[in-house]
Image (cartoon, one colour):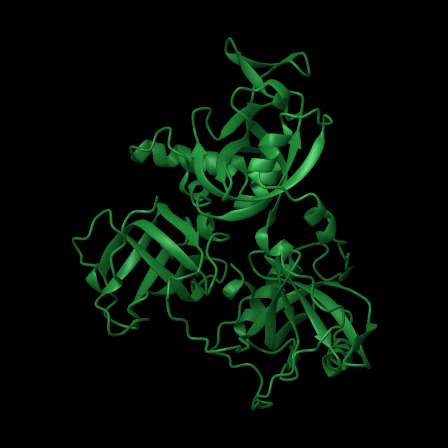
Length: 456
């Protein structure tokens, strides 16, 4: 259960151990002017149901813990943070004398927007357009696709930024011709592009961009961001070579998932039948707890097998040998529930890493540092605890263990976002049309354009 939250306008400097529920209305990264690779902080503006705003900031040295946990426009339960005086100059929220600072142990849990009544700046169906800059590292082939009965050329590019975060951009119609003409002038050099007024979409659980009728493209403009990207790419032996784009195919078919979709109650009933060992079922469930009796990781050998202490070293039964260095890998026991029942789903290394966005060894190292300075020994790391309250589609495997187990648990060997089950859209592709007044002045030298500004 979530603790009672207080309104943002009731926060005070002396506020301790309180919680708020708020929407992230704006999200961005702040870099050092001296070193564009130096992330100083990740910042956001939070708004609650009373309409009160506050500036929140995450220091750069642990901002990666929240990189894949916070998204602009979403609603969150936030607990364990510091309330500090707002900046004297260059305030993000000018009429609030206070701001919030996250810490590594800050709890951030995603909430459903149902009945929360938290306002958003978007009224109705409004397109939010984004400008991005990045090195063109991969390029697909120009193909023609059907749009409203017309054949329209399209081209998919993959960009990367200073932190090697990648995002794909699909160009349509005139944007394809514009890009190809400009590219011909810089064919043998590193290509860095600025793409304006792109539409943010989602494909296979990843953020992607799509050009609109308002999109303008500038290859190699003379701005600081482009210079920084070119300098970084020039130091890479293959930095100037554009690789062919590999288009991933959807691994799972939505209809196949739906045909094997069961509730927790139905899965528990199936365990009482003569089911086939290895049966795979899908289940939409909410994580309500993380069972930590067995920890959140296990020590492993290079073969990924579990190892046990053996004198001053470890013993790997699978490899039948001693191991000197243990590698931590995820083994997380989730307490999950739906409207019918509750049970335990266990996820292992690769699956857990995709859910969390961090490797087990990186979290282990971070947790060791925290335990040296704080009373957090044995606690579940905050970045894992932040999964509580989130709903996923789990693919679970039934084994012989489930025939006789007194307390049932299931291994989830794949986890998908709930949006995977959204109704299949019309196959016809609609190129976004956005009516905006645009100029040919080019990108402003003072404007900071970054791929992950809207793709956390």
